Length: 151
Picture 1 (tube, helix red, strand yellow):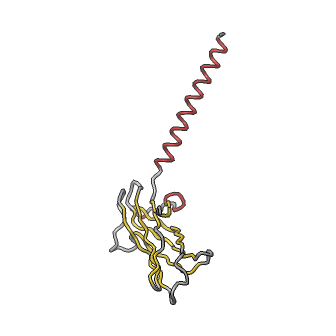
Picture 2 (picture 1 turned 30 degrees about the horizontal axis):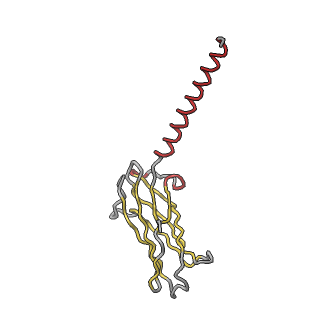
Picture 3 (picture 1 turned 90 degrees about the horizontal axis):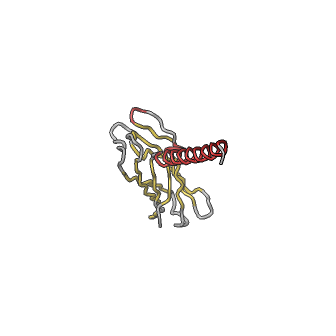
């Protein structure tokens, strides 16, 4: 093997190592990106009320002062049969926020003027505001993860 080909092989090995390191760092940064993890339990219908339990886990490195979410209640055809918007964390001076690493529960209650025509309802939850310690706003599209509960 001549000097030129040995340098090409050495550069190729070096480039592979750099690519591996870059991929590892990229993967680590993606998995280290913490968030507010929200688990949405199935809808429970009792009479003229639908209750949707949420479990909120603060995986962020700082406290959450408040979080506001909208819940849309859909029937089996996808038609909206109810909605509600609430502060699910904090929202007022007397309600505490959610500390880093802490978990909390919230129950959306949607009342109807008449009984629901079906019990096969689905809840869609969208967060529209996430306020961190000191009043700093977080990006709800990046810092909130909403998933249905395992059945």
